[in-house]
Length: 179
Image 1: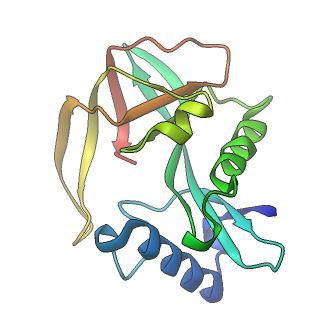
Image 2: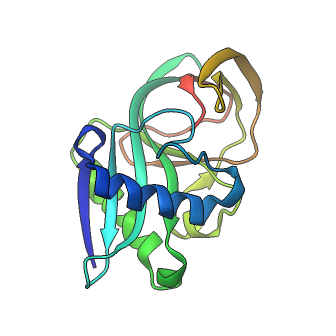
């Protein structure tokens, strides 16, 4: 297994086609058919390749400042974590999460943050569910326009402390779109 860090602007046509196929396979009917992101481009991705150099999985990553209970924090958001069907149950998802942990060492990242319906993989990797009310920029994913500001508690919110700060549930302003 080989994991490569790829900046979004370096993705060529061939890799784009493979990523789009993977994302549609993993997220089924929900995923847009004309792009390799749901709401907004990630800054970069970790892409997993098998021993035959075939695409096995990926995760998009978005770095930004958020406001948690009135304090700015540096967050690396995980977007569209997925593994190809033929490569599932081989530890690739865990390997991608470990790669992200290693990436964060000695970097200015306080927390990893993601939204997940199925939480087991993330809980095993040290993430915890957060009980926080969120505020975020609402984006219409069909026509790619902003349509408002969302305010609500989101039960899928998960965080992991990777810096020196402790997470305190409360109010979270994502200061941008919902991953």
